[in-house]
Amino acid sequence: MESKNKMDAIISLCKRRGFVFQGSEIYGGLAGVYDFGPRGVELLNNIKQSWWKANVYNKENYFGLDSGMFKHSRTWEASGHVGGFSDPLAECRKCNTRIRVDKELGSIGITADEKMSEQKINDLFNQNRDKIKCSTCGEKNFSQVKSFNLLVKSNLGDFTSDGREPVYLPGEACQGIYLNYKNIVNSMSPKIPFGISQIGKAFRNEISPRNFLFRTREFEQADTQYFIKPNENKKAYEAIKKDRFNWYLSLGIQENKLRLKQHDNLVFYAKDAWDIEYEFPSGFDEVEGIHDRTDYDLTQHQKFSGVDLNYVDQETGQKYVPWILETSMGLGRVFLAVLCDAYHEDEMDGETRVVLKLKPELAPILCAVSPLLKNKPELVAKAREIYSSLKKEFGRVMWDDNSNIGKRYRRQDEIGTPFCITIDFETLEGDTKDTVTVRMRDDGLQKRISISELISFLKM
Ligand code: GAP
Image 1 (cartoon, rainbow, N blue to C red):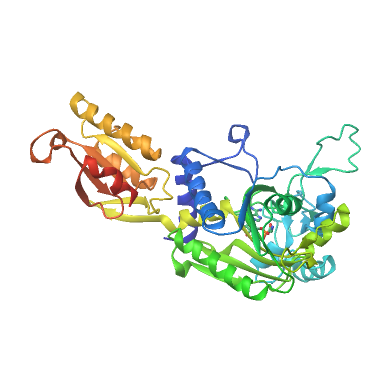
Image 2 (cartoon, rainbow, N blue to C red; image 1 turned 45 degrees about the horizontal axis):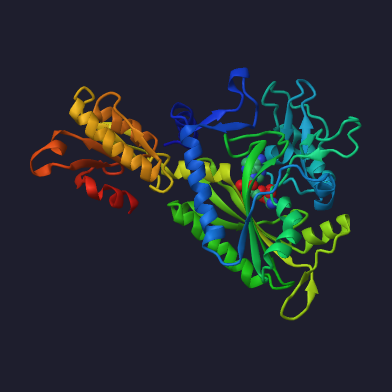
């Protein structure tokens, strides 16, 4: 399937089947903001749970956190975001459309990124102006390139409205971890090395949000900050890269669609940076950043807050500011990668069908329960009984008695439901009494399973 068509098909499925909606749609939409619908929120939560398990429960000496979104305004000065968190912007002189210059240069094969100096990117832009057209009016008449800060301001507690010390929305979720590092050391007495993991929202005033969930203005990040002794970064960094790569495989994503790629240009806080990239229909792009942040963050916060952020080694008595290895994953991007990987169009029973081959742990609905005929009270009563017991056990269970059985299967295939359970006349009598039909999503094969074994079958 052609790449643009595949992405369009996924976007359309997301809306049609209740995965993702454009934010504020009834008012014409809000650029770069999306809402997760009933199916989407389940898939998202299942991805989060898998991540939490891998980054808190299955690790020793890792601590979970949920910090508040608003942070003291000095946080973002200390972090470097007030001074250095910007993208290169130019504006069409005719229709005022704004473009992100590094991305426009990239689209004509010129390597540029947001970390270049304003001067350097202006030079590159000036050499290539004649090749870049405004997507709205078609003119090639843009302003000079300016750095545009991505932080989103709020007026929290600013009753004077003088805006001198704005409280920003988080530009990256991980700052909540740095601000709570001392609280966690004091309350949990962790032995170094230790990790702090958090899922939190981030907001960026992206100049050109694009590619559906890929580049949005509001998004969620799942971060782990791993605190280590100074200079003990090399081995741990390699182990973390491998561990994070393997987590994507555990989601069922095909290995040949994933790669690790080192950054050529580093952001202000990083000494080394690698991305985990997924091959989206448009090509490989970043889903997670793995950064060697050294002691940059804690040293900055120590300087700006005046609070001692040294760690005291309980065994040796040594005192130092720990170094940090960060993994930071965008949940919207991973959600999109999981959907792209699971999306298939194939032939079944002589028809083309759309199917999401999601791992059962990730599927929004684990199983659908149906009576073969909805006008036979004895079938409906038995099906309701089975539905209630499965719903109590798994939650992600759907009652489905709409239209004929073939249509039910197609609908469930489209939302990735791995198992469809049908209660038929054989469930009620004869040798097959108290058995049901379980139909498998990926190959369409059916099995008869006894009702008493259903829960253990679905747990496999
Ligand atoms: N704390 C480090 C940090 O924020 P980043 O590379 O800017 O690093 C980490 O972001 C991850 O957050 C990215 O790999 C990406 O998955 C996600 N992300 C960043 N900007 C995003 C945006 N505008 N929309 C959606 N996801 C984004």
